[in-house]
Amino acid sequence: MSEAWADAMDSEAYDAFGEGAYDSEAYGEGAYDSEAYGDASGEGLGEESRSDRRRRERQRQILLERQRQRQAQTRLQRRAPSEPRPARAAGPSPRQTIAAVRSLDLDTKVGLDSLRRQLEESNRRAARATWAAVASTAVDQGLASFVTDAQNHPYVAAGARFAPLLFLSPEKKRGGVEGFATDPRVIAGAAVLGIAVFGNFRNKEQGANSVSIGNPGDITPGNPGQLNAVVLDRSGIPLATQPTFTWTSNSSYLSFPSTTSGSFTTLDTAQGSVLVTAQGSGVTGILWVNFTSD
Image 1 (cartoon, rainbow, N blue to C red):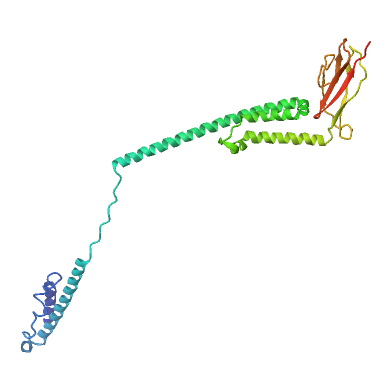
Image 2: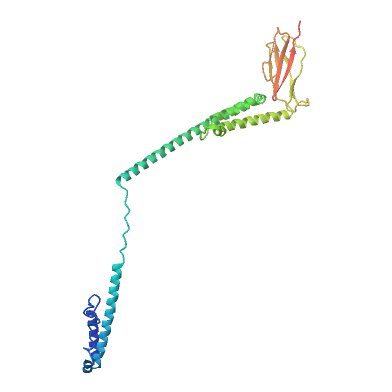
């Protein structure tokens, strides 16, 4: 029975002296008088009463210690500065938002205009390149059809090949010497001219040095005839491959119905001398033809 009663007292003491319900002034260290519960009382009570008193004493000390810890913690919390609240970032004002939207619209419009101009410029250059290709094809066919004239006039043929390149347009126009030097038309013209000069020099080095026209002797006025020519190297030896010559004269007394043939006709009134020229492989030969007199 005594043990059950002690347990009940313990639970009641804990409930009575729980956290927040205990008063240090009512149950301070000075409020407890050990003499009131002296030996005389102890002698009147049995061993069981003394055991209960010791248990209650321990409970009181535990409650006091808990109260001291709680008060110390409360003082520390009061002394500690409160943490500052983070400042809330201020958002943009409606006027700033409208200005930002207008600026974005303006930038977008400028970008679209620039893109449109670039596309138009690219289309224009593509169209010019197309016409340059068409003209170049026509010139190549013309030179192939008049191959003899092209061989006799290498620089004219080079100029004809260069002409279609004038349709080209530089990607970006620049000023000064840099813009002139980087122009594709200038680069192409320099390349064509250099190749033409080198080819002409090479042909001469291979032996095309002069043209020799056979002398037919005195020609009777009114009679037709035939002239022949050969290209000689520097040693005076005819080349293995002879070109087609272009024949001309300086007088109507003697004419060539076909300029690429040595066949000629004369007038009945022809007299004196006529200068005949034959051109081929970049070199030219001359001959004075004499008419017989009555």
